[in-house]
Image 1 (tube, one colour):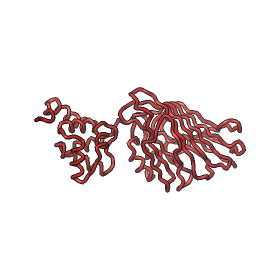
Image 2 (cartoon, rainbow, N blue to C red; image 1 turned 45 degrees about the vertical axis):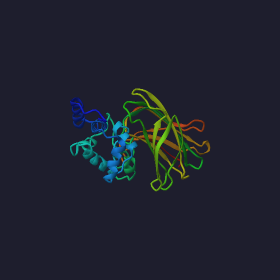
Image 3 (tube, rainbow, N blue to C red; image 1 turned 135 degrees about the horizontal axis):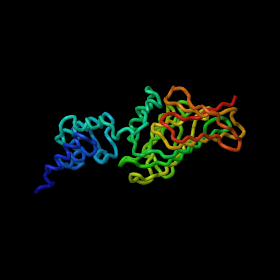
Image 4 (cartoon, helix red, strand yellow; image 1 turned 30 degrees about the horizontal axis):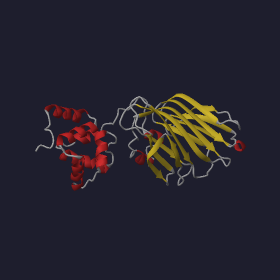
Length: 309
């Protein structure tokens, strides 16, 4: 009895085209279909070769929800090429290409965090690190500074639009004021954290946020989330690092009325360690938050700094 349909010439041509042009997920899916092997059997073959991969991960790879990035995953892809009867390097070669072409104005994380920052290796382990399937249309940040001059909490509201599928997640990274005391993600609204990594020694928290439902291309969603700072150390600045241009950004800083700074300025940097540009004085009032608004915000670093003396 024949368990699956024999590959047709058209299916062979589709697979050949996918292996030449990508993307990886389509080539893998077509190769699996041609092989007639189910994901459970593929899982068994990989385990026998010493590179175990779950059926869930295999499913994510073939649908494009995630891509193999870690060294052990790349070794599994090499084994898959043999199991599926594909030329050596045909699938791994596709992984060398970006999942999506870089959008205009997009910069590398290294430019924003520094090429030697060890947070980068953890950041790049997130599936959403280099994703452009969600673009930010509007970003509103609300930072609170206590009477003791320490940062206490950061509330964020983003409006995003889906421009690609199926991967739809937003990666956020926040650093505490001192090493050893990373902020905590304490709440989300209209989204959920799919994965969170805390780098205690470095004082970082990274979280991958997923909208409350899957979005069709063109649809928008609201993401709201809040972090609490845990160090209790006085600080004099805050910045947001933009890989992609954003149509509008509002940063408001709420100072305790009894502890207003002597001065406050907004600024931007093209890259970490660069020269401050567009430095502007921000008015201060005990009754109102200090704020800076930008439209057509380009990639780079936007922030506010203040001092009490």
